[in-house]
Length: 217
Image 1 (tube, helix red, strand yellow):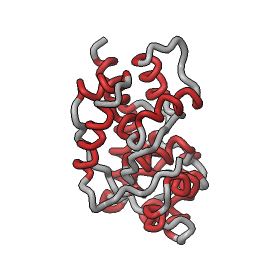
Image 2: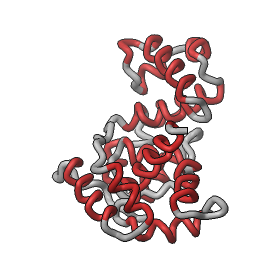
Image 3: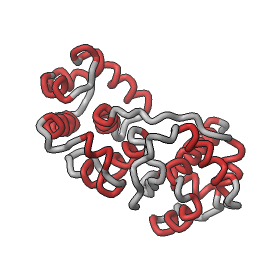
Image 4: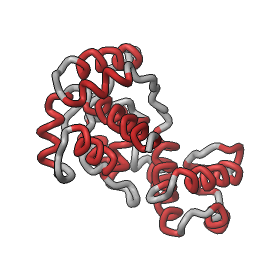
């Protein structure tokens, strides 16, 4: 995966429209899903720091529990601002009271320190290609490859990231491609070749399709 940073001069909505045209016309099982959903409405949340910290806090939690904990966190930090300085300034006991595990607290404080003291430069991260950005993020404890890829997709707006680690994507592919077992990394990458250069957007369609399928049961 060697994708480039998203070209900011192109409105993201225009890119989503281009992605729709491409994915709807490739004659792939995904095309039917894309046409049924239509052009996606989405704008990247460009606050990388906040997205990383929220991802760490919410790892392995249900959406309901994660929402409750995040509300407590924002109520506990100065001005409700998730910043490196604020996280480092809040006592561990306060975060524990919000429901965050000791290990996750270590992770968000370590990441905050790395950003505050320049070990991780979020401005330069924006200019790194996909592989470099993932490597930089995943060097911090608590940020795995999956989390790094989610940050690239949802915060940095990268358009061609394939998170083969994501169970939801694998389940959706198994379903719409009529597979007997979950696809492994190699199978998923082979299928996803047809989605380039919009594998991030394809993933959004798969997640949306799976959410809809689950809600109709």
